[in-house]
Image 1 (cartoon, rainbow, N blue to C red):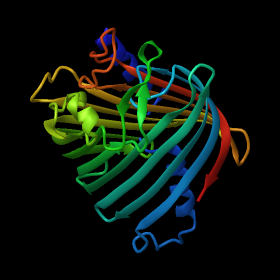
Image 2: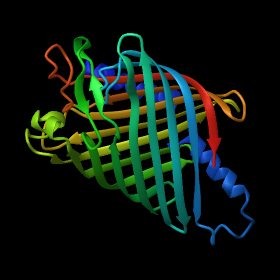
Image 3: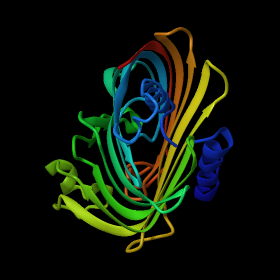
Length: 307
């Protein structure tokens, strides 16, 4: 069953298509249009961002960050980027921040969508498509999260509980502007559980009473973007991690998919579909001690601002 779910996630990414955020790419291209011929070698930095505010209908399944199975929500999304490119050197930095509140008829107002994701990647070009690359990634949330097994509110997550800090040396394959694939056989990942209550329970694979653990393994990250027409776009990211030291066959998965339709210059309809599988996130099942595929779906309509 796990293999079937895993293959379905891979198919979703590569059949519909997945590399850098399309909006980030557009902003980068637009910035490039203002550069005069001959200036490319002297102007190395590109910076920009995007902010979305959406009214959305959401559904969750086994979501460790907290929330109810069905909701109406007000969500916000902030993306900032800073890119450096000169000669054989490149340095890509992105910040993604999601935050939202939901409303349900049974459980009232609850936090639903909360994710902080910072990615930095340095590359040195080996040829036209391959880079030797060093990647660092930090992922966590800001607010407290709760799960609701049998409609019982249960504290499950908070800021830095969990948090994932990853450092990886590998190779980055970029055959074109829409796709990139980073792969590394040597990756260090730290899992952090700062909250004393969650730490005492030994959640997220950290030993009871301790606040962190280190893992060493293999890591791969694929990013893709597909523009179907002037209005319809897709972007996706898939991260895979295998811990050499413990159950390497149980691969951790983090996947985001965003389908967006531009209704006007400031109005956008979107569908966000996220998948997470962490073998150490044992919060589910009948006894609340089993891992499971976490699924989040948000369909929304809102305002969009570029800067």
